[in-house]
Length: 258
Ligand SMILES: [Zn+2]
Image (cartoon, rainbow, N blue to C red; front, side, top):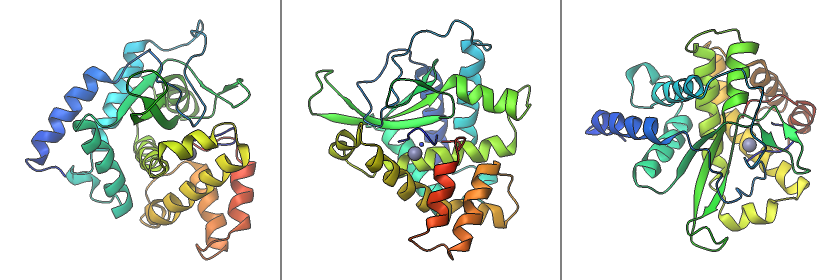
């Protein structure tokens, strides 16, 4: 979920993880838009005529990141329990066909329909039968152009990705999973409701900030500066709510990677 300012069990597991990744690799790029993720940035935008990166390049990056953040990988044992839990939830739901993951070739949209070039991912629910009625299933959308801009232009990683990008991506997946603790009815209600949306962002950022960012920072993992600023704000409140500094930080940030 996101808004204007923001900007988303293996053994037998390893085998299953590999299988999932292969499935993801095949399935991740879908240009058809999901039925209105309630979190408002939909992908029904006009096609990008000037996008710098090829579809294959974006697909490779996204699939590489999805593979890299697999919690069961030994090198990911620094992931906090929250990250493990949330990313595993996404993987397992995906394997069960209960969640859709999409990478789209457009930027996100703000509630007023304007393009939002800050948002990396959003989440919502889509109508399984395409009729805007139940049953609904969750969807996480990754905005390919935004991700490429972050990695290739802002962070100047000209091929593959670095550890900071991987952490951003892992936090983003975890955060979208936190949003998806909310039912479809919540998303529907929050659609177009800026205040409700922002409160939900604060809720999710707080959970991820306390349950992941703080620990990653403590062990010296590289993080985007936005996460560090948020962590500084939370620290001022002793990582307790309410935290006006944290709210102010999110309000002011127009570049939080989601
Ligand atoms: Zn969000």
